[in-house]
Length: 349
Image 1: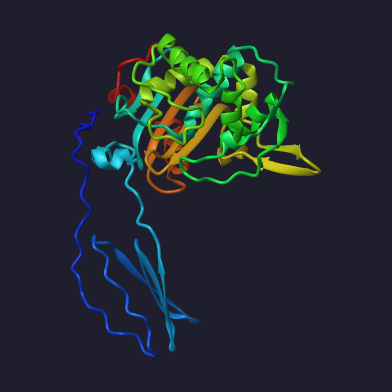
Image 2 (image 1 turned 90 degrees about the vertical axis):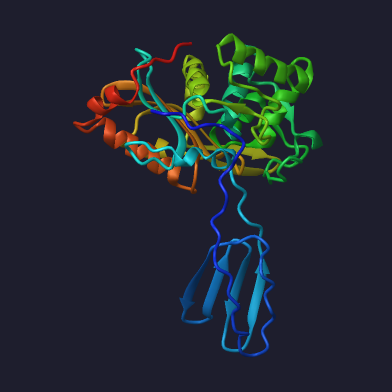
C-alpha cells in the first residue's frame, strides 16, 4: 500500500457559504460569526424549538429566547494535517495508520502508512510498564502521588489526589488498564535517578529494540512529542507481550483500590477485552487531540497470533470499529488472499 507523504502541508478545512440568519424572536442575542468557516447542523426538538450547532457555537432557540454557548473548534490531529486520512485502503478504515502482523512469522497482513511518525498518546504507557518491569523494581513498594504528577500539559483530571499512596503494582495496574496519567508519572518519578533517568531508559529501550522512529519525553503520553510509527509499535507490543505481568495488567477489566478511606473502582479503557469474540493477550489505548484515537493489541484471530496497531482514528468509537472490520476480514474467506496482496514485507525486531 502507498504511504502518504508527510509534507507539512496539512489539509485545509472546506469553506462554507456565509449567510445572515434572521434575529430570533424575543430579543435573542446576536451571534458573532466565526472567523474560520465551520460546518453547521440544525436539530429540531419539541421543547426548545430549533438548535443550530457548529464547531464554534451552540445556539438554542426557543419561542422566547436564545442561548449562545461558545465552544472551541476541534483541533486537527497530526495525521489529518499531514493528509494521511486521504490514503485509501481495501477495508475503508477510519484510522489513518494501520498495521497487522503475524506475531510468529512477522508476515505483514495489512499495512497503511506504517512508517508515518505520529504522536502516540497513552500507548506511551506500554513502554513505561516495560521499563518498570525490566528494572525489577518491587511492586510492593508504596509510592505517593505528588504535585509533580498533576497534568500541566493538557489539564486532565484524576481521582488520584495529591498525597494518594498506592503500591507500585497498583500504580502500574491503573496506568496500563485505566490509562491513569498520575500513576504513570509517579512510576517514572520513583525510578532510580528520577524522571530524567526514566525517560532516558525509555529511549534506550526503544533503540535497543530497533524502534528508530520512536522518541519519548515523558511517561504518560500527554505530550505530543512522544512519537512513533506503527512499525515500531508492533515491535513494542511484541516485546511487552513477553512479560506475563504486562499481559495480565493490560487485559484486566476492573480494579478496586483503597484511596484513603474510600474504595475506588477503575475500569479498562478498551471494551474489546470484555467481548467474547476477541481473545486479547495484551492491549493499550491512547488519545490526545494531536494523536487521534489509538489502539495496539496482541490477539488470537483466525488461528493466528496477531499484533494490531491502529493510529490516528477519527471518532470516539472508530478505532474499535476498525478493529472489528479487521477481525471480520481475517475470519472471512477473502482474508488470507487480501492479506497476501496488501503487503508481503515483514517486521523484524
